[in-house]
Amino acid sequence: MSSVETSVQTAEALYAEVSEGYSRAVRVGELLERVAELAPGRVPDAEALAAERERKLPDKQGVEVAQGVFLSDVLSHPRAGAHLVWSMLRPTQGALDRLDRYVQDGELDLGFVHLRREGRVAHLEIRNQRHLNAEDDLTLEMTEVAVDVALLDPTTDVGVIRGSLVDHGKYAGTRVFSAGINLTRLYLGNIPYRFFVDRDMGYVNKLMRGLSSPGFRADGVESATTEMPWIAAVETFAIGGGCQLLHPMDHVIAERGALLSLPARKEGIIPGASNMRLPRSVGDRLARQAILSGLEFRAGTPHGDLLVDETVEPGAIDEAVVARAAALVDSGLINAVANRRAIRAGTEPLELFRRYMALYAHEAAQLYLSPALVANLERHWKAHERRI
Image (cartoon, rainbow, N blue to C red; front, side):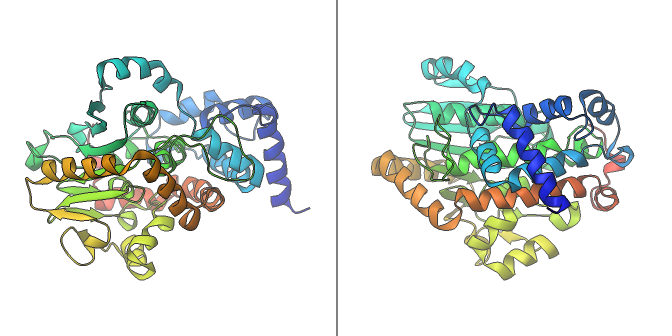
């Protein structure tokens, strides 16, 4: 048996122990914490992680690389990896704790995220205004809670994601969808490696697949999911992680001229699951140009409209969202969910996602701590000159 096969097998054994023989869901955070206790040295312990968190990105010692290697080993094992994917699709405790209040009030203020229900439509608004609705370690948990609550609400048939009005610089008083990852907090060392895996196996994959059923199915068949169609309303720009969110959407409405981009080349990271999902929308050549060479898309242009279902003039998004949501509600939730599952079966089955994430977990860890990422952030973002 090769060293790689041995590493995967020992990772599976540890995963089986933590999950009590695959009998319960285990999130990435709990898994890494328990493995640090069960197999000292395999992944960093809490003390090592706390010390690393105090360091800026250029000064980190690289202890989190071991987390990426271990998670890649788990995801490389068909059964353990599938179980971890299923686990990360279960609703969070934070959502379960807030569900009754939301069902009763129809509104949930989660700080960086706001959720409200209008009729049978859930409106999820990103509210990190100071950082142009960027994502970071402060926003991730509540974003997933909001997605979970919207999916669990029995009176909701359609979800809408939109950026709030911002109060920053030249964009003050306008809506922006998302500026992607908060590069300032990344450079300052506030965003841990685990953020990337938690995000794409958590709420982003829930937008794609919904919530998994209580019972794990080792055969990988997606059934009994709790899901609904999602609409994205894009104003001004959807950059990086914001653009990544468009891939799992069932309908994207954008104002004419809105910028849609994946600045992976300038950032030095893998843009989530876009390497797998973007080619389905724009084709292989344009996807390579976007990810490797920085090609940008604009809504209302031939290339940009490959990412957009509906382009409207500035100021017309509200009306377009209402009309599209009403059309989806009228078509019936059962019909929409069945068709979502059928589309995924042909384009991105769970097995494909598992194998992609096995690679992503490993490569993202290497890039997260690479000198090239630091150099890119300093060259293109002037991150060393910025303050939170």
